[in-house]
Image 1: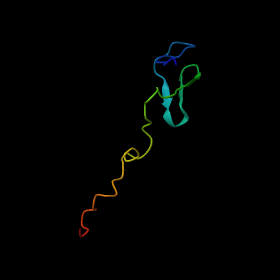
Image 2: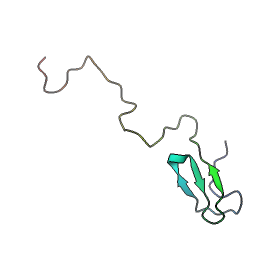
Image 3: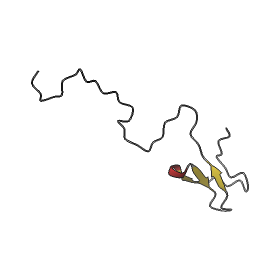
Length: 65
């Protein structure tokens, strides 16, 4: 997959990034460019705990054991 750092139409390098829409847009010619994550890349939108594993065997602090 090609990663665009400049507009394929006019060459402008000041692209506007819409990460929630997976799109970039050129401010000069208004060309919309698809913007997808690379393989294995995780989105920044979401909880920082989304990958955390829950250990149910570990007591919660403050609980009597």
